[in-house]
Amino acid sequence: MSDQQASRRLLRAPDDLIIGGMNRFVLVLLTVLTAAAPLCAQAGRKSPTASVPPLVPGVAMESSVEIHGSDVAATRFTLAVPESAFAVEIAVSNSPADLDLVVYGPHGGLVAVSEYADYNESVMLTRVGEPELVTGLHEIEVIYQLRQAPVVDGRTLTSIPFALSARLVTVDAAITLRPGELTPGRLEPRDAMMRLYRVEVPRGAAALRVDIADTDGDLDLFVNRRFAPGDPYDYSHSAQTIRSTETLTIAADSVPRVSFGTYYIMVVDQVSFDAPVDYSIIVSLTADPPEAIRGIPVVPIPADPFERALAATVEVSTPDGGGSGCIVTASGYILTNWHVVAGPDDRPSEDIVIGISLDHTRPPVELFHAEVVAWEPERDLALLRITAGRYGDRLPAGYAFPALERSTDPVRISGPVHFIGYPWVGGTGSRASITYTRGVVAGFQRTGFGLVFKSDGEINPGNSGGAALDDRFRLIGLPTSIVGRDSGQLAYVVPITAVPEPWLSMIGW
Image 1: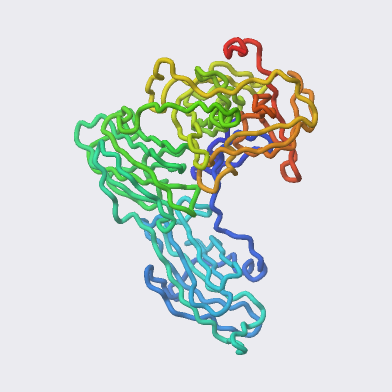
Image 2 (image 1 turned 45 degrees about the horizontal axis):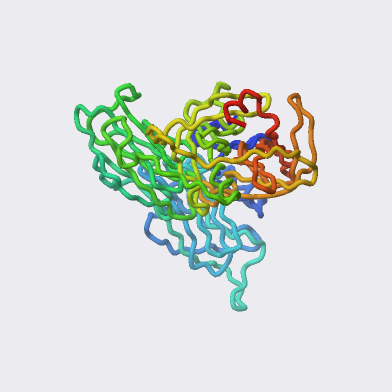
């Protein structure tokens, strides 16, 4: 089954065997403690006290850590995080020795540690990180953990100077959007990958619809009426799928329902924090998709067998997860794994979006909707059919898709296997581009429905339902699971011979 939302922070963890999930990475700021003994003794610290000097955001504070024998030395500060803060960056600079940063929360619990070999440490805490930034008074320690005093230019230091600064990313300013206008935007790491907008909804509006388009990122939407807190999870409405084409609609039947007044819209990338992400945003006053983002482009059908295989291996996403799939007919039938499209009630998901790789250097473009027409949980197989464009547009008459050819040759041990799919490890951003790996048939295993075959080819979560191909790039199976991932792995592949006979008739094989 596709990975489910494990908490309100969208913490998704891949199953040990099933590999369908396009799972979110979680930013963990609590780094491994390489000098655990000194810090563990302080983990039970009480809440910050007024006697500790406050750190003013935007103002660098000059101070020092005083060395007293072999004891761990630290200088403490407090930092007030307001409700309007989405993120805070704390940084040590101008230090001649290796100082580390420790952050405690309003209730005294250890929140984050930065103790790299760099002399100048920094920590970024956000409302969507783990651990999360919370409102209230935090305590910051600048700490020297080594047992011997530092020696600089032949002189042993008894006082280590430094500068400490804090920078808040707040929601005090919002960009105004006008309904019907497609507006370009960019999320920047400096702004913790967040941007805030506002829109005025007039009396009598049927709905407020917000769409994200034209992006390679997995961006999420949070909408709130009247005011904008720094924590997006305090907003009244949200849309948090693994897709780049995120949509959120507030209508008369929503809770709370649409009403006139000012709405605030927060756009966040909760996964990738290292590189800018461009996108477009458009707001509408109806529930219908705006014309500016509708339409179905022509998908190229390459003549080269390998390029055609790349084009015919698609990304499959549902609100609960996803994986990969293989287009097997020009009319748009897709083979994938059942666990890729199974909903939380073990019924087929009714919201399936298909992404196609138009540029192999970028994540796939989400162009189509599909429906499940047949499924076989025991064999972990599902047959889909593309039914419409991403926003409901009808497919033009005669519209054709690139399709994989089926191999009729027997699969043999040592035979080559080529894998194509969308594993989440296939990208450094919040969405992955198409990935190709290869191996050999390593063996077979009997199951209740027949043989599956094993391969030493590299596959990962997200490859499920993708293409396993022979040397002529013909489809021989669908990668389904991984065994032994922690100590070398084997890919398990459901062969094409496991496709039920009635499905073959629908496909035309």
